[in-house]
Length: 183
Image (cartoon, rainbow, N blue to C red):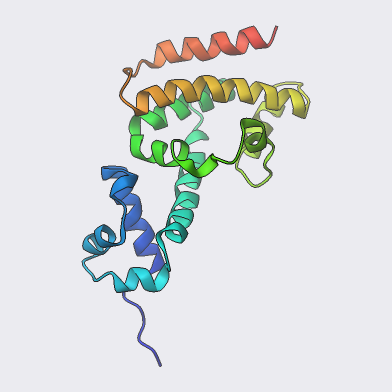
């Protein structure tokens, strides 16, 4: 019987996540993961034949974490809460935000493709909008697009240290964006 691996896929993903959070995606490589796990590179390459496979699995993990983060509803207006959480994520998890949204992951997609993609986690957000409004799916997607572009612009500026965090100001911007589009 072969020996039980001491380094698991879960350990590799957890270590990779820590590296990205603290040092950014540019510092994620087999050698740094091995150092973090205090092992050789062999166990990592045993589980992941190349870094692209590992990054794809890691991306799914970070995307799940991000989705959970967005759904922490701390506001009477769920849509506003999602927008503010998106912005706050970029402030608190700059490197994860960059990994998710400022990499070449979506280089072959346009915004409409991403919104209409049935494999993404937007359905939960669409369901919240549906519950809060009387909009049809096309109107929901239009409202989400406005939310996404507005919140993403602010979040990108935060993640790249171009502006300082001011939740009240961001809340006003999002509310103004929603109000102008609901008239």
